[in-house]
Length: 278
Image 1 (cartoon, rainbow, N blue to C red):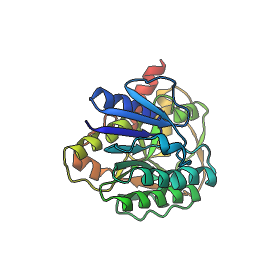
Image 2: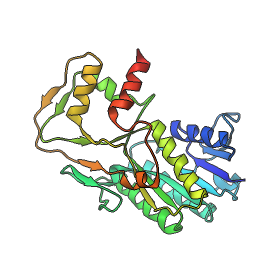
Image 3: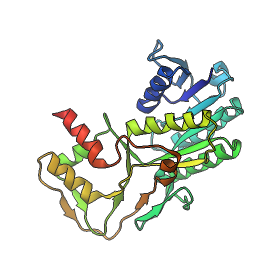
Image 4: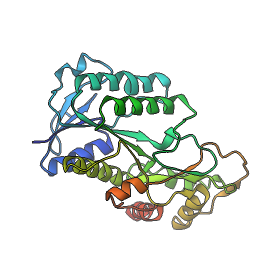
C-alpha cells in the first residue's frame, strides 16, 4: 500500500489527508499539536520538525510525503526553523521518500506586471521568501523525483481577507495596474492530490509547478467587482507609481499535465464564498 506522510496538517493538509484516506491510501499526519484521536482516516504523529529528536518516533517507510508547513511567525528565525532546520531534518530522516513541497509564488520578485512561469528568475526581495527559495533548491537537489508546487495567494473558507477589505471601502491602486494572483484552497488540495496520482501512475513530471488560477487580475478590478457583489461602495483610488512586487503567474505547465481548476477565476471562487455568507 502507498503510505503517505503529510507534514503540516492545517486546513489544506488535513483536507488533503481526508481526500487521500478516502481514496484508500494509508495517511499519517505530522503536527506539533495534533488531535488526540485519528480524524478522517489520518493517523497523527506529534513532533516538531525543527527537533531531530522529535522525529525519532517517525516511521521511515513512507513512499510519498507532503511538506505543507506554516512558520509560527513572520520572523527570519521562524522561517529558518521550518525551511532550513526542519526540512533538513526531514530529508535526513526520509531520504528515499518522494517529497512534494508547497512553496509560494512570493519567490518571484518581478515588479512590472510581467508574466512568470517555472523558468522565470526566482529572485525574491525579502529574507523570508529567500529562505523558501533556498528550501526549494535543497529539496529538488536531494532527489530528482521531488516536486515543488508554488501556490499563489490562497483564499477560501476561513481565508476571506479580500471580502472583509472590500466592506471597509479601501484605497486601491488603479494605475499602473497591480496584478494579483490567487488559488482557491480547494484547488490547492486538488493540485496536490492530482500530482500524487500522476506520480504514482508513472507520469513524467517536472520538478516545479506554478499553481495559480487562469485569471491574474489587477487589484482594482478584483476589489471593484467584490464591492459590487457585496452591494457596498466602490474602493477609493490610491495614487501610486510604485507597484512593488507585481507579476502575473502562468499555470500552463500544470494545465498541460491535465489539471483542471474547480475555481478557474476569482469571480467563480468569490461568488461561492459570498453565496455561502447569505
